[in-house]
Length: 186
Image (cartoon, rainbow, N blue to C red; front, side):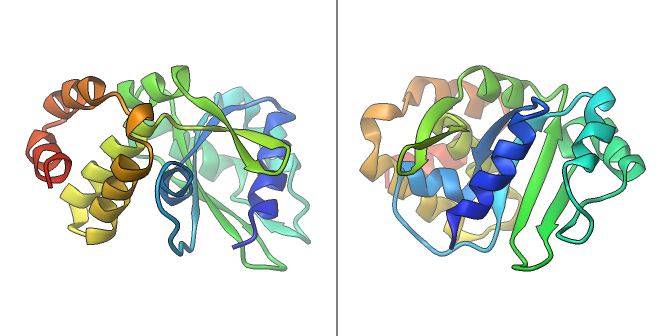
């Protein structure tokens, strides 16, 4: 996977500027073990007044970007909104999750970390606790073992970066404690 495409996209949204954090498989790889992935997940604090500016960043010859009305509708879904931006020449896709009122995402944005993605190029990445909690939620929703494997990889590679008490507190609030107990003591 070519991370230059992700970096290019992030630099574009930084120019607005939009507050963001890389999460999902890319974040779990940065904190854990490498694996193949077919998408890039980015959480974005996306004020409605920035939608038009965002869509103008992407030349329609080069990118697919949803129309402003569709983006506004996804933003209004609060913690369940989702949209894609796709590089039409490479097929590279970024899944965007606009958040406004999701307490976990707000916590994640406040605690995000600058991480080197490519030599000399830093980006904002979700804290490992956020990544683990979201992976547990996705596991609960769909049962995919890859989420638990990602969590185990993070716990093995970066245990000193992970605050287990924070995970336990959020896991209790989000009804994920049984999954945390399963994966953290495996």
